[in-house]
Every structure is written in structure tokens, then in C-alpha cells.
Length: 479
Image 1 (cartoon, rainbow, N blue to C red):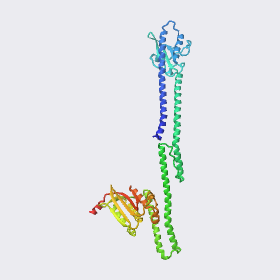
Image 2 (cartoon, rainbow, N blue to C red):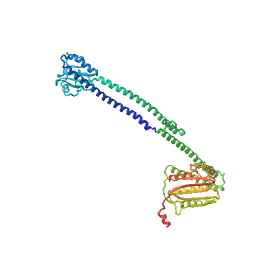
Image 3 (cartoon, rainbow, N blue to C red):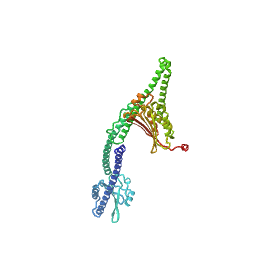
Image 4 (cartoon, helix red, strand yellow):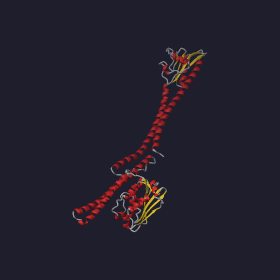
């Protein structure tokens, strides 16, 4: 899979490889050239040495004539050739031989020649032009006696010309490869940067409150840029949803506050201006009190909601008897149960008390909300069932009532803040639309599940809690 790391690695590898290859090739070519030149000089020395030994045996040996032949041999391979006698007097150079001009090699050069060592070019007389490397020497022997010396070296101009050709070729090739790699990097980087510019533009739009824009992911391939764009769009979706929830939250809060406050203002105004007669003040005070209590519940619920969402809710988990707690809360609704003449049933299928590990106050709030909803929306003269089961280390608690079916399209939103179905808005003015949301938030804080199903007029609200071992004092009390 192509990704940013792979792409940048390829371009970096091309550049580094090109540099390493160029340096290695130039160094290798220089060494090969050096060895080739040295072999040429050794061949010239061998040829000239053989020729000199043969020519000097002749009675008509003439240095001027022989110089032309020697110059021809050296020129065939384009090397610099110097011949001197045993005293160091130069008798042949690449320049035309001039007997009137005497040049001598230093004694230090002659001692190196006698030992067959290479001679650095910088110790040669200034009349000898600069060469590319040290002179190679060999003594001219005649009947076991040294008659002179042969010195040869490659010409600097030739060496520089060949190296310039090598460097020129590799620089041209390197420029072409780097240009090609640079163009590739430019177009690929431009392709990768385009969505980043889109993200920056979208973020600027988000800053002005518009969360509707998204990054186009159709032409991004399958690398990290696509993953980043998808993550950005997911974040934008979350921001859009959060903004919608915030606006809905403000609208719902405004509605929930407006209704009781309007009612309270109306009743108080009626009392003050005499519209409500004194004999009805008691009833009016009761209605005002109910509305004030509704506002109080709203404030408490909002406080709990804030604590839950900011993680500031202090969950003091401890073992407690969920069976006893559930039954006690259910009996606390005795008046409401009697008002609807509900038939309450208990199905607690445990031989002993069932203990769970949770925050008792929070779970009491969950049970209170669920049982209150079950009673509130149950038809009169119907059954109400509290069921508790133990399975796989979990306590399963469910409350079942018989009433109007919750529409399937409402079930996915039943746990949303301030969400109310049409039947709840028409039959219930005391509800805030926060009970189920708080119940789910509390159980999620306990890492537990909650669900509601509604079929054929039977609605079941169920949740789970982790079981715990009974405390010692509880077992001793049973004994």
C-alpha cells in the first residue's frame, strides 16, 4: 500500500543512491584510469629500454636520430618521457632535443631512480611540466653498468580531460534523475497537500459555525492522506451532531423553562390583580408549588447531567442488595400504583439475596426513573412486572408494563436528551425528557447496558449490573 512514508522513502533513496553511485563511480573511474595510465607508462619504459639497449650496441648511434624514434614510441600512447645519462644530464624530453641546452635532474631524483622508486612530480626541475602522477623510472643498463635512466609519467591534461568527461556524463545523468524525481515529488506532494488545504478551509469554515462542509475523498487513493481525510470528516460529523444537539438542547431547555415559568407568572399575576378569587388561592398555591418543584427537578437533573458528561460524577461503588433495593423503590410508588389499580408482580429468581457492585445512589435514581416511567405510561388495571435474574456474573433487572406501544421510529431516540414521544407530551407534563438519558449515562459510567423494547402493547426496560459477593455482616445476619 502506498503511503507517505513509502513515497518519501523512494525519493530520498533515489537522491542518496544517486549521490553514492556518483561518488563511487568517479572514485572507481579515477582508480581505473590511474592503473591504466601506469600500465601504459610501464609498457613505454619497457619498449624504450629494449630499444635503447639494442640501439646503443650499434656503432652509428646518434642521440638526435634516436630521440625522434623514442618520441614516436612515447607519443603513440601520449605519455611524458624523460631520458638522462648516469650523471643526470637530460638527453631526451618530449621537446625537440637541443644539445646546446643542458638540463640535469637533481641528485635526489637520481637516487630514487637507482632504487627503482616512484618519483613525485613536485621534485622534478621546473622545466619539466606538471604531470598527473609520479614518474616511473628504470635504469638503462649496458653490460651490467648503469648508463642512464628512463622516466615516464602521464600528462595532466589528458587525465583532466578524461575525468572531466566522466564527471560531465555523471553530472548530466544525475541532474536528469534528480529533475525527474523532483517533478515526481512535486506532483505527488501537490496531490497530498490538496486535501490539507481543503481541511484548512473546512476548519476555517467550522470556526464561523458552519459544520456542513467536508473534504472530498474520491481522489485520495488509499494512503495516510485518505485516512486523515476520513478522520477529519468523521470529526466534522461529530461536530455537526454536537452542534445539532447543542441547539436542540438550548431549544428544549428554553421550552421546559418557559412552560412552568409562564404558568407561575400567570397564577401569581392572577392573585395580585384579583383575577383569582381568595377562595381559590390555596389551589393556585398548590399549582404554583408543583411548577416550582418541576423547575427544581429540572435543575437537579441538569446538574447530574453536567457531572456525568464532565466525568465529575463521584461513583462510590460498593456491594448492595439489588433485590431489596428494587422492591423498596417499587413499594415507594404505592400511591401511584393504587391510582391506576395496577397488578404488581415480582419475579426474583434467586434463592439468596442478590448483591451487585455499583453506586447505590445512582442505581436508585435509575430504578426510580424506570419504574416511574413504567407506572406513568401503563394502562389502568394492567400488570406491572419487576423481574430480577442472575446470569453469567450479571444481575439482569427488567420492568415490564402494558400500555401503548412505543413507535419503532421513536425507539432509536428514546434515550436522547429531552426526547419525548407524542403520547408522553400529550399525557405527561411532569416529565423532563431527561430520565432515560440520565439512566443510560449512569449505567454507561458503570460499563453496563440498558435497552427498551415495545411490542404488542408490552414495553420492557432492562439493564444489567455486575454481581458482587455479599458482605460478611449480611451473611451473619442471615445466619
